[in-house]
Image (cartoon, one colour):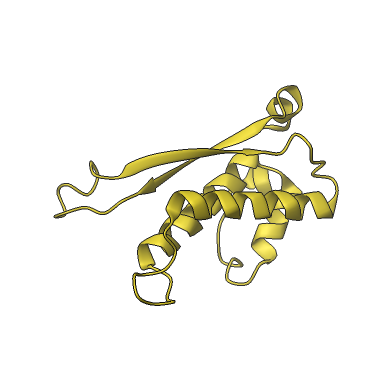
Length: 123
């Protein structure tokens, strides 16, 4: 989402996540269930580090809701499908916002140093 669009509308970032499982390799592409959730951030100023952190937490919470359940039944281990969905959804949302401060915050988190974001988000 460009800064112009954010400034003009400033209401929400719609996130779309592919979740689900496939039976067989041929059906894999057609069987994903797409869910979306809006993350509102018009009340935030992404020039402020505290607001960048707040937006990131909102993005993670949205990904958690859409990609859940988090844990495998009968354990406290995160389900691999949840982790894959959550990580992809958060990355997609950070890319969509295309804000340098949010991108920097995301890339500074443990395990994200090797992740590539579009050049626009790195400025």
